[in-house]
Image 1 (cartoon, rainbow, N blue to C red):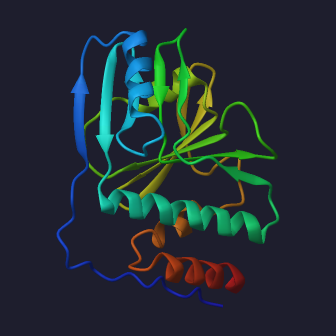
Image 2 (image 1 turned 180 degrees about the vertical axis):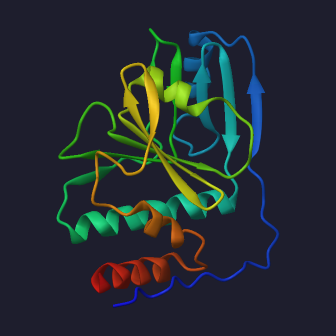
Length: 201
């Protein structure tokens, strides 16, 4: 049976870029102070790499894609009765390795842990710190990156990431199918169409 095509329609609104500010020679203590000043506010999102600090205010387009991404992954896990816990932009950091990140979304599989199994990043505006280098220092098992309509999966192998054809944490999840729904105009519509595509398989 043919899979239903995702309802993707062009958006007449001009896409908005993310807004970024970079600070250099930022000590770990200064990074912690900036986090404390921001408090529980959702923005700016912060990434820290050995003295370099990126403060990013995500655009509406960025946030829509990352939220749709999360909803699709969660819908799939619910259908498969997989224990998946989401923690949004959980502030991950390690002083010893001078790394810090706040992913677009992150998840643990099989129950809560002290570190996510999967970090999701939406690359909407080019530039910024090397996210894989940050997550490598944080020891994140997998990083999923959406860029230009595709989802790349990077699995940690020793001290480096390798690009993988599929996730090893959730190997049955078809991320190419997920990617095909991420630019749908309606998040709820994307989830419904995604569930229909799963049922048709």
